[in-house]
Length: 527
Image 1 (cartoon, rainbow, N blue to C red):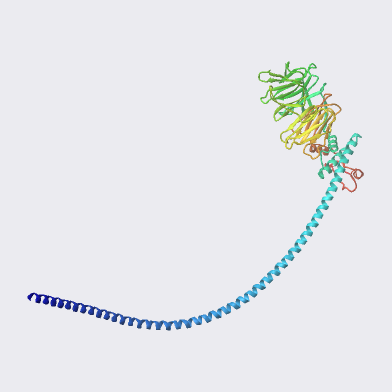
Image 2 (image 1 turned 180 degrees about the horizontal axis):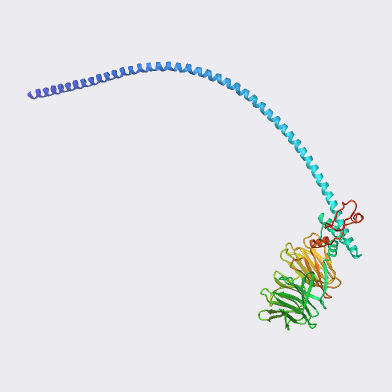
């Protein structure tokens, strides 16, 4: 029983404890809820205060906004007014721009018309100028042809008057011929003009020096002294002094037949067809036999300064320091001519071949591009031209740049010598003439410089290239002045009078204004 009460008391205690706990919890939660409500109320009150402040601020802001809107409306009205004014100004500006464009277009059109007018005027001026130039050119061409023809006619008449012995008139005609042909750009090397100037200036002089044919001549580069040799065994030196040719015989022996000569320093070398080499130094003569060379005809210097002696069918090398023949070579063909090409000795044979001598034992052989017997050769490194002279008088000009071959005809028999001076080619022949050819002309025609009465065997030019020296078969030595300006100076200085009026009208013509060619005082002047 007691146990039941204990259980009941335990249960009641537990219930009481549970009720107490539950009450405490309920109080706690209610207290918390009240506190939360109070917090919310406080927060709501604060929010209300804030809302009141915000409403007040919003009211103020709204009033400010109304004020700003009023200001904005005023500014908008002002902007609209300004826009209206700007639009009016823009429209006015556009009108002005359009007017300016229109004025510019009108100005451009006016400028274009002015340019067209100027261009038309310029075209008309150019046409007029062209017509004037053409007229002047036509007149100049006509005058040139007329005066060149007149000059050539005067030159021919000068030669006739010279033959008739009318020296004064011949000189006047020669000078007037040069005057007109030079004034109008004609060729001062026209044959008749050149011959008339040469005759009037007395530019050709002849000296009879050798008894045999003058075969070789050589001019010293040191002092322009000259050595000549002949078939009668003669070796002579010559020096021009005060217009006279002073000569000296170094050797005269008919047992020798000299064919070629050269000067090396102070030593003279001459080769004789009889098979001998003559060496003259300081007038002392030494004769060296050449047993291995048949009919020696030519001599030439080698690259090392020794002497190459060449015959009809063989050659020998003479060592100058050792004073003896050091090499020989016999040939199975006959040589017809000897020349120089690119610093080397060049041989031509009777079988249509050419041989460049590299040494006595070494030849470079090739075929000659022309048929026939070659008797003379020359080449020019500056103009890149080669010429071959033939036995029949024909000359072939070969242009190394383009391979063109030109046949030059004018000589009537064997060519004996060819020599270049720039684009001027000089040639001599057994027909007794020395001719000059301008190898850069479109049409290459010969001009006779010298006409002799016998074969011309050889010639050369002095160091100035203004004088030619010619050796003839009869032993004559001829000097010929080649410089046209020097001839003209001589002729002019020798004029003794002017043309008379009748002579001027007859030879030159009334339509040509009279000119005086004599300027020195005291000389006769035409009335």
